[in-house]
Image (cartoon, rainbow, N blue to C red; front, side, top):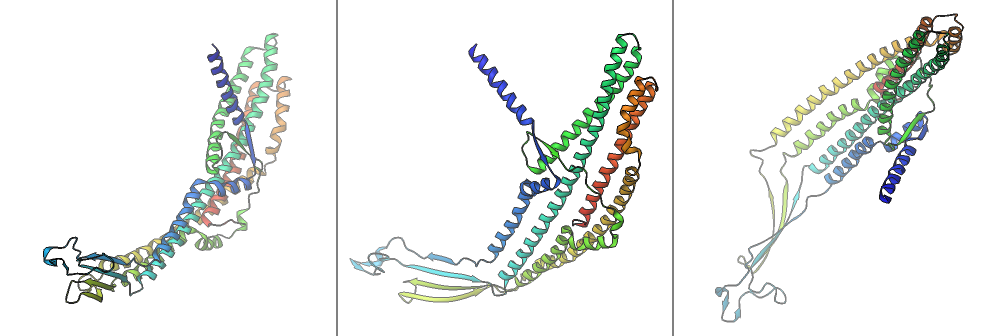
Length: 431
């Protein structure tokens, strides 16, 4: 029995601990969210390592080839022909080392005479620039994902409050109507209509809560934060700039210089140009310098010699790799041009979408009725209780309230998202 109580106590403690963790609220501004994102996002950390990997490749390319040492012709034991009685034929080098032993030692060093090593270093440096551009592109993509998620998060939080206002008003009316029905002053049909309207709003709130939780998960994943916290954004209302203050032509021009994917495509051409120079250098055969020592292997008892060797470029002059490098240059030029055209098309599309969504948002935002709706809730509720309006008119009002508020919040969210999309395709923060 004691063990059972102990198990129940531990289980209750774990539940209490998990509940306490779930109730932990982290309030952040949009700027603080981005700062945490830049420090903790795992995709960014992993992608940034590619730059260090490229640095390591540059260091490796700078290294000389290792010298080669070979020892051969060693007799591990002496034969009877190497002795005449007890007389020693081959004396030791020192002490008793190498007595009656013949061997040869050769030391060689490969030398590139056409600057292959320096050309390879230049290639790897361009690879590092490509890695940096790719990191910037990943950062750009993750940042716009983060900002769009923040926009959705703010919208869902605001719309949740709209539904909460409806639920509060309907719940208060239902309490009053329930007392009136109990006293026989009202029919149950009217109470049922209000309860049906409440259930509909509560069902929609559950769906919004599920979407809100999904955005919570997405934001916390991007921030690499603890799973048992609840995020709150404290600066939900941000100014959305007017698109008319921006020049479409200037934005398209800026994109050519600032977008990392365009830069990476141009760097690919540079890389293949460096590769062509490297492959052409490979046509020139390398030299191998060598020094050798031969003990008792020839006419002289101790022979020291020097040599040089190189391939004769008769059949293989690296023709295939040179041709491949030339084709890669032509291909990368086409792809770079395609990327530039795509970037400009994306800027035009994003600007037009932003212009349209912003125009609709300002139209809705400038409607005076939007800001009067919250104050009208109590008025309609009192009029319903005073029998000045019917229950159908009241339900029609709350439906209108919800759809109008939703349209306003959606227009605001879409304008914010389209602005972030415009900044994404331009490649910089638009001021």
